[in-house]
Amino acid sequence: MTQQSDLKQTPHTIAIIGGGPAGLMAAEVLAQAAVHVEVYDAMPSVGRKFLMAGKGGMNITHSEPLDDFLSRYGAHRTAIEPLLRAFPPAALREWIHGFGIATFVGTSGRVFPAGMKAAPLLRAWLHRLRERGVTFHLRHRWLGWDESGALRFGTPSGERQVTTDATLLALGGASWPQLGSDGAWLPLLAQRGIGIAPLRPANCGFDIRWSDHFRQHYAGAPLKSVVACFGDLRQIGECVISSHGIEGGLIYALSAALRDEIEVNGHAMLHLDLLPDWPLQRVQQEAAHPRGARSLSSHLQSRLGLKGVKANLLREVLSAEQMRDSELLAQTIKMLPLRLVAPRPISEAISSAGGVRFSALDQSLMLQQMPGVFCAGEMLDWEAPTGGYLLTACFASGHAAGKGVLSWLQKPG
Ligand SMILES: Cc1cc2nc3c(=O)[nH]c(=O)nc-3n(C[C@H](O)[C@H](O)[C@H](O)COP(=O)(O)OP(=O)(O)OC[C@H]3O[C@@H](n4cnc5c(N)ncnc54)[C@H](O)[C@@H]3O)c2cc1C
Image 1: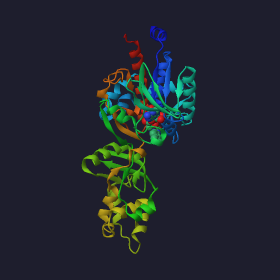
Image 2 (image 1 turned 180 degrees about the vertical axis):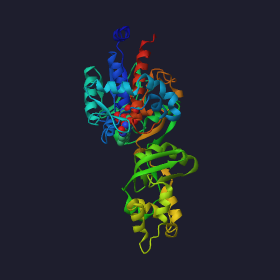
Image 3 (image 1 turned 90 degrees about the vertical axis):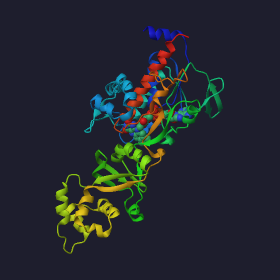
Image 4 (image 1 turned 45 degrees about the horizontal axis):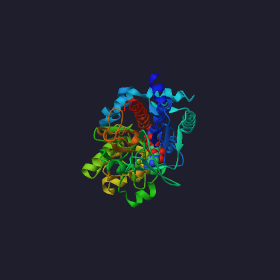
């Protein structure tokens, strides 16, 4: 209570720039402590990427044990762990339940809000924030600071300067820039000497040099129930052939490792098991079965159940002569090599890797070199696969940065 009343006695101006899940969660923490918050966003409405995430079924977090959950952040676990321990997946679910919106666990352990949509949650959330006095300034594009340290915004009626007691940047990464996050903040912080890891595509598709014939006939075709292998990584799932290469959840799951390999070696070899339920021996037997006068296509279909995109992937990587070598054919069905030559551009990726380095921040997510300026969300240097890990870390870092601002306001002087 003392915290709230102390803060109330001194009116503060807090700017949160970026109205995605991270910025809005920080606004929630501050508004709850009766601090007046002004949220600025470049777009005509907030939470656009959050709404888009809800289009295909909003996967907001995951129900697995916290230790497994934390392992999904890979090399960034150490930095993310304290944030997630302070606002773990269970707390996120509780928070959603507080809006009268139930959550449920899907078969894969993924957690979804009832109805699987983001819109009802965002609507209720914005309503509550407004009721608690949070003010929204839309179509306000942050342009950096002026010489006096005031924030500069480009607005439809010209440039505006705003002076604040604390600023919280929650500007997102650079994927899907049409939704508002375009990474334009990066040079604004870099020129102030803030350590930033370059933004890179994460949870992305890859380019493969398909033949014209394969591209024309199979772009858009789903590849169902295949296993993708890269190094020690093995993942079952579905993906989609695209005109550029390959896309989809299965590929996204391996995309960080594939992207890193391409950066080092110029390409990455991904292997697909087209018949993951069949042991190699059975595939060998069926491939070697005498086919008599039947064509190779009908042989593949009748003995191995392979047709359409799967059969033609084999033709894409094997010559006509190699296709007639039953042993090579069987080996390729179980381990079809695909040469990935580049990740798709960051604008097409689900999320971004890279961003403000944790070494540039203190424990409260305040920039060491810019006291009073905090950062949260996808603009921080971490990455995670899809599965609810992205949103959960955005919420948790927004929560932590909001708390950080509160502590900062309480400091004397
Ligand atoms: C298609 C798609 C599906 C997804 N599905 C899921 C999912 O199911 N589960 C999951 O966990 N994650 C999912 N994600 C990822 C998740 O949506 C993001 O990680 C999350 O929205 C990032 O939150 P954030 O608050 O850090 O940034 P954002 O949500 O990107 O918000 C940043 C805000 O800052 C504003 N902004 C940026 N620059 C400026 C500026 N210069 N001035 C003013 N405002 C600015 C933007 O307009 C935006 O409103 C998905 C992403 C995409 C693209």
